[in-house]
Amino acid sequence: MKKRFHKIHVEISNICNLQCSFCPAVIRDNKMMDIDTFRDIVMQVAPLTDLICFHLMGDPLVHPQFKEMIHICDEHEVNIFLVTNGVLMRPEKFELMLHKRFYQINFSLHSFFDNFPERNPTNYLERIFSFTERAIAERPDLYLNFRLWNLNDPLGSQTPNTEMLKRISERFGFNMPTELDVRNRKSINVKNRLYLHFDTEFIWPSLDLPVLGTEGKCYGLSSHFGILVDGTVVPCCLDKESAIPLGHVDDMPILDILASRRAQDIVKGFRQKKLVEKLCQRCQYIERFS
Image 1 (cartoon, rainbow, N blue to C red):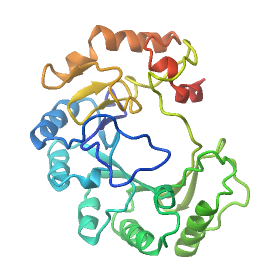
Image 2 (image 1 turned 180 degrees about the horizontal axis):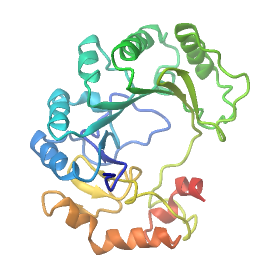
Image 3 (image 1 turned 60 degrees about the horizontal axis):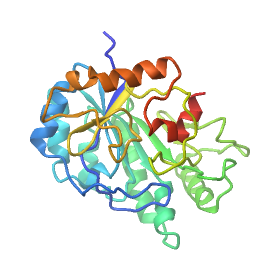
């Protein structure tokens, strides 16, 4: 039976080991999700989705109880979608990330040169490539994405990306298309279930930005929603500062939060192509759905 949401974002940590130019700083207090809170969340969302994304802000690999969280997901038969910059990848993490509960892992390779423009990426890439080769051999069902956001360069001519693509091509025997406009094509298969993923830059929504419009639609609260590290439920994965707090998991069940008047007004508005929340009216990403 198909469940209500495609995936639910659970921010197990809002702490990141990097500070990328394309990823805004987190204003909220630094925090890691308590393991008991995580267990309660998974128990509640397991009937709603087959897929939990360990990400909203921060890097999940910084959490010291990462292993325990995997086992909790396994107990409740919920699969895991992981987004990481990969800097903390070590052989001891390989076994954990080859667990059967991992459905997809995204490595944000573009974060390396954005933080370390003069550093040689060989050691960094070797760990990720080694894991990828093991995953292809041992977990052929696992989806892997090498993310190379081109930021403000839709034709992908940036030197750092060119260097990364060269190394990927050499390692995995892949010939990159000579012409690629990532506004039209964002995913390219490399091998088996390994893909390159491209995207262009967007501005994260903020209440400080000017209104872009009051009409539009979004998949927030229909395909997904988010739960921040402190247990606050938000309507989408871009509400990084809880501008639209729908409720807190310590105060009421998640189903009741989703059934609240504010949440239902948002969903109704999207169906009618109306943006009822101030943050949504300032969200550039919504333009992609028009």
